[in-house]
Length: 166
Image: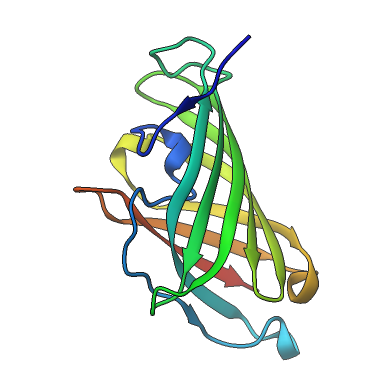
């Protein structure tokens, strides 16, 4: 039976979607109404991890089949909490060229967004783009993508999510 390993910050792909490992000042911008008149909408948020559990196949290494469960708080530019992310990731390729498949739900004012995609080589801290696969409430027919950018790695990881609704 596998037992969860708790961590505040891990250097693996499991954190790429959701993360910042300590509280930070955050930016949120909403440029338009949801799908009104076919207009695109962009929402920018920052996140802080609140819970993260890793379930390794082989303790001490990143291996195919590892699972991560994570929850983050989302903040606006005044550092007001505006939502959360809840997600799971599965390692599909271990080792130095690590890859993970992640599914994340963003709970936001007015509804939820679901996002899915691959993350490659977390160590690079490069940007990642994932597809919006659906939503509820004002996001019911949501389509588009979420870009995750690392804006700081030292002393902690800080991620900015730019949600592009089309």
